[in-house]
Image 1: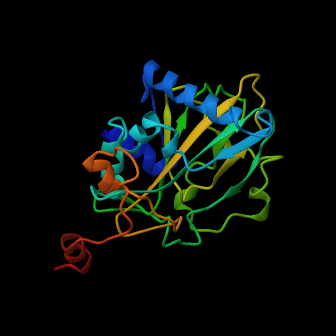
Image 2: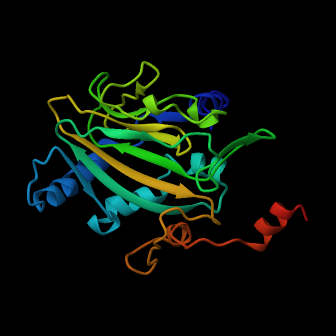
Length: 247
């Protein structure tokens, strides 16, 4: 993470990592998405959610430790980070989702902290864009800086149907990934573009935390050794334990 990226993540609560996926990766991911969407009873439902994803094929398993994002995850979660859960969504129209999470009240599961020159998070989300998300078309939105808020959000900052001016859409291009701390107040604006929105969500925790509460079978597929480590249930190493108690 560059000095500028670290600064922007700290003040905004999110980063857009541009061109994380190349055209070949995008094509493979979209082709497999086509296959899964065709299996839906109504593929044209305004908003559809898919989970889990790792059985869709190797291109989806390759995202577990994609080289474009691993350095970021190591910096904010430490090298022992783990994949907590993953899912995908399509949006054809509308599909707005309420704003949720916030820096206050404090959460032991998706906390955000910056101290001693380090950012530490309890839950980091990677939002992989498989299609373009032009400005003003909807999709992922947030209240920048809300991950550091000292106050609970007013009730009026829940609905995205008539969003406040402080709620901002985050546009991106196919192949980009949005990295954000789950402590950021975020949601989904109604989708208005003529093309379908396709988004993958991979969410990671430090080694010792779990948010979703279900765990992966590291022997289910042709995972690499590093992927198997990332798929482990929560654990704490002796080195990490020593570090936490100050030994």
